[in-house]
Image 1: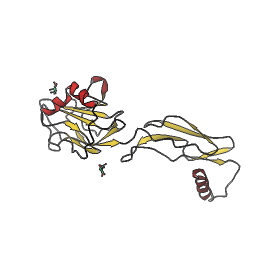
Image 2: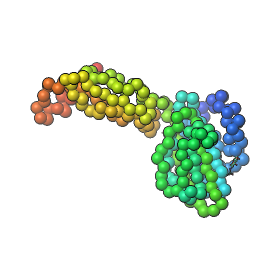
Image 3: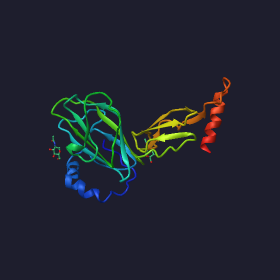
Image 4: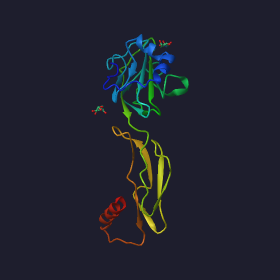
Length: 228
Ligand SMILES: *[C@@H]1O[C@H](CO)[C@@H](O)[C@H](O)[C@H]1NC(C)=O
Ligand SMILES: *[C@@H]1O[C@H](CO)[C@@H](O)[C@H](O)[C@H]1NC(C)=O
């Protein structure tokens, strides 16, 4: 019903006073839902899932990870009484300015990635009507970055930021034609933190013409050359 805890890395000491100061731990203690959630991954479910949540629920889950990590939350089931039973997700602690999204209704929300090491879920329900509730998986991503995918021969890399959501572009020097994808986007890849959505392209000499059917084999040779 609450998150399953696995390995428990030490609580970053600096965060403890912050959390206590916000009164969030106190809030989590007095009720049978919510709490502090740690570990590389786990499940967060509304109380009673999937048989329906109680009225007047007021649950706060704080997902906490190490300083250089981020948290990805993906929903596997979602059914809340539209507009009256709400799951609010905060990018950080439970503070108005951190509100990322307010979820309600019956559509499966898209996944959410924190920018920092805390993600807070706040679930409130009104006095009447219940539904199945929600089930979400959280996963700690080891890194904010996809890393630099590297320069390519006879090409130019445009872009200097390699974090999730960033795009970079490759172009080729004149006389060369780009083969592959010119634009790469750093995306969240489950289980692997972040990665580019395509491999880096390569630049082919415009003057070299291939007989039909020979292009694939020759292209692969060029890739091998680039990678060496
Ligand atoms: C939810 O619980 C917190 C902490 O106990 C409390 O401050 C808040 O007023 C409660 N909200 C509702 C709607 O009951
Ligand atoms: C959760 O973490 C454990 C331990 O690192 C790993 O073996 C497992 O595959 C992970 N599960 C998911 C769904 O990522």
